[in-house]
Length: 442
Ligand SMILES: NC(=O)c1ccc[n+]([C@@H]2O[C@H](COP(=O)([O-])OP(=O)(O)OC[C@H]3O[C@@H](n4cnc5c(N)ncnc54)[C@H](O)[C@@H]3O)[C@@H](O)[C@H]2O)c1
Ligand SMILES: N[C@H](CO)Cc1c[nH]c[nH+]1
Ligand SMILES: [Zn+2]
Image (cartoon, rainbow, N blue to C red; front, side, top):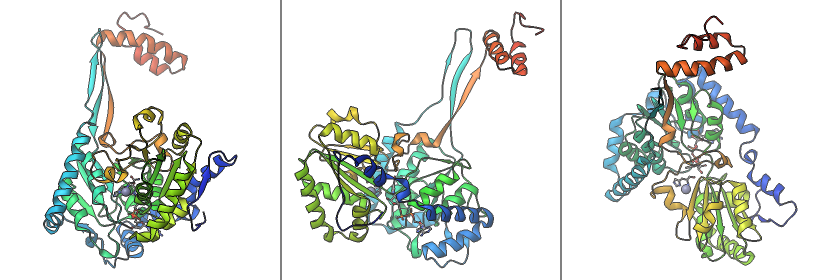
């Protein structure tokens, strides 16, 4: 996709609108064949060469001149040291955010359940936390202490046996807030590796990095593509790739607020996507003017500019009903309903990772401290994925405990169905348990 000097304009009344929108949203527009091939090569190399490959990739992609894997392992004491190196205000903010995230996630915890039928048969589900989870904390273009909390707290609430974190430290720059957040959240082990190589290490294990049962967490396109490829070898939470924001506005919010909300996600990554949908054409012009005026004031103007002009859009729709249709088509990671009465529109929203209601709820509050998780599905996967949660760190086993009478009754039904499938061993296994022996001898 080419980058122009101004943000793209689309109009839902255009006969080609659906095609233009599909092109704007396509996964291929960020993960092309070269990304895919590079990620496959990295995964293969880490599987075959373990720590040696991790050291080489860390030198190459993170500009870190380490001699051995030992230099990429942080002991728990280093996390505790970080807590003493941050300011009291930073520690207070981390602890406040952690408390809010924990209290929100504690409500998600699922317990085992069962019920007993009249004949004494017990049916249910046993809920078990994962033995070991791998958390990916991004660290290429920004540092993400908030992502440490968002990944680790639900894992801890679920009762995961061991929580292993990976985080790249480009050029060896360690972010003390990231390590302090890991200490507060109770992370067990930290490796300073990132990208596709870190995902591969967690999925397959190396001499130093333990193999985990599930890899969770957000990352850039290399990380998101790697998670797609290791799925099956390990579980993954979702595709949580480059950040996205879709603002639906009735035209009555301060245009500077909306421009900054778009920037807030654009500043994550050149591949991030920021889109505004409104029925008010004049308002779209005002936001375009705010974007142009505010852009030079931004510290990360270069990244924002590439993202906004490469993958962003201002979309004119006929009315709010059409705005909601477009939002459901996009299925964004973050949806801001910057309108007078967001609750009136909420029932019609079907696909979004997180929904920010009303003019005062900026998406940024959700990124840090509102309480809900900020690890969210991107690239339209909110159609079938949910925010990271305690449920991602719990799995379920079915429980079936038949009484003698229950087994006898169920055996009759199972026998008929098994013989219908010509699976005679199944049928006879069930028939052995039929008490009146009607079926015996078949
Ligand atoms: N969806 C979510 O829930 C969510 C939450 C937070 C952040 N994010 C996103 O996470 C991403 C963070 O990206 P980041 O880059 O800052 O950090 P990152 O840790 O995701 O990626 C950095 C790593 O990418 C690899 N890499 C970079 N260029 C490469 C190349 N050319 N070839 C191979 N590997 C390469 C390197 O190994 C590097 O360590 C952003 O896209 C942000 O929008 C998403
Ligand atoms: N917006 C990101 C999720 O897409 C999360 C984040 C962390 N820090 C700032 N923002
Ligand atoms: Zn953000």
